[in-house]
Amino acid sequence: MHTPRIPLVWQIMIGLLAGIAIGALLHRFPESRPWLVENLLQPAGDIFIKLMKMIVVPIVFACMVVSVSGHGDGKTLGRIGVKSLSYFFCITTLAIIVGLVMGNLLKPGAGTQLSSLQATNITLPTSSGGGHSLGQVIVGIIPDNVVSAMAQGSLLSVLFFAVMFGLGVSRLAPERKDPVIALMRGVSDAMFKVTSMIMAYSPIGVFGMIAVTVANFGFGSLLPLAKLIMVSYLSIAFFVLVVLNLVARLCGINLFALMRHIKDELVLAFSTASSAAVMPQLMKKLETYGVPPSLVSFVVPVGYSFNLDGASLFLGIGTLFVAQLYGIDLSLADQALLVVTMVLTSKGAAGVPGFMFVILSATLGSAGLPLEGIAFIAGVYRLMEMPTTALNVLGNALAPLVIAKWEARNRESASEADAHNLPERL
Image (cartoon, rainbow, N blue to C red; front, side, top):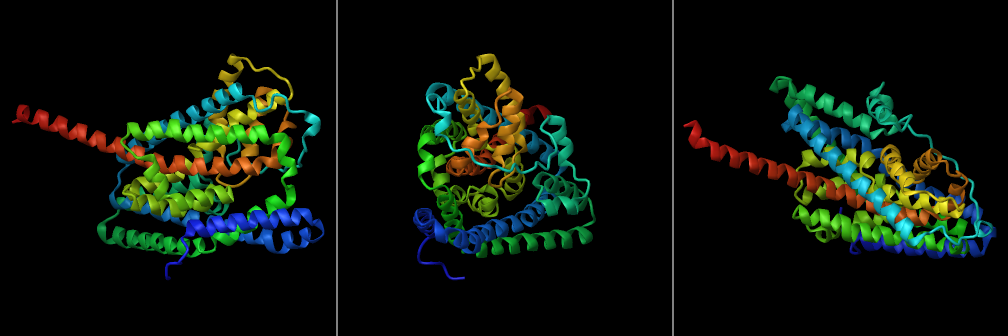
């Protein structure tokens, strides 16, 4: 394939702007809207999301098996797993706290008249995890049927089976092991080629998705919720520039160089509001950035369920918005309890548009807040889902770099300790 003259990031931006223009036009002339949305625009967007979701499971499975069976062992994997989960829980907890602090300071729901808001009918997607307690999340990771887990796109279950299968392959004799690893490496490489082919279609998919959103809602429904939208964008900018930047600096990582390296994926995640749409390409980009493939193939898929910084941040803002909208005062003790609840509920998310409503409804329900508040957010949630998805992707791009630095420092400390003890052994 020859390289297009216009860089992909600009193609996506053109698709985004053209989609907004066409959507605004269709909103002004609603008579031609239903046919165009149903037959052209909606399918154009759905095709792209389905194509990207189609390749996620084969890539995750093949990459993980190669990593574990080729040069991994159970002890190393366990250590990386503990480090990854510890990091994820710390960062997402920070994101929830930042969301609550910004919600308390800027009060997105204060002064908004309920009568001015337009309620939207929403259908909540069902969670494949079954429940939200820590025990249920852990049990939900182990698949009853791995073929069924793959068919449902249950990433954590696929990852669990891939690790077990990889450990099994690593214990085989070389004449049995090598062909399996070669096959899986071939599958992985082929799927990355397929990803490149699908990415060429991404500007059309972005055009379709954004056109449908603008055509259906227009800009008039945004005004009453403008404050909520502004608070969300401001909080996300603060989290990137202060929290993630500080974490990156402490680990000796240049966050802005990383953002430049994955700019295509960030723009695509922002445009589609689907983090699953960029996972295969993100994994490839992180490998070219110098992160060990074994780390990328483990940390990124796990991060897609456990390290959703944007979703966690919006949980805090959205919950306080609903409380302020109905004039319900939440004490500091209530909010401290909410942090614990949100840390658990935010771990059940999936990288698809709209799943945030499941988590938000679980959080509102546990706090005794009116679930009807979600219907008011739903009309404009797409505009807030775009930056939260981009933040989820950035958080999951930074995580493998942080774990890689952590691992490197541990190895340095171990080698220094060995060098220090060497004379005593002799």
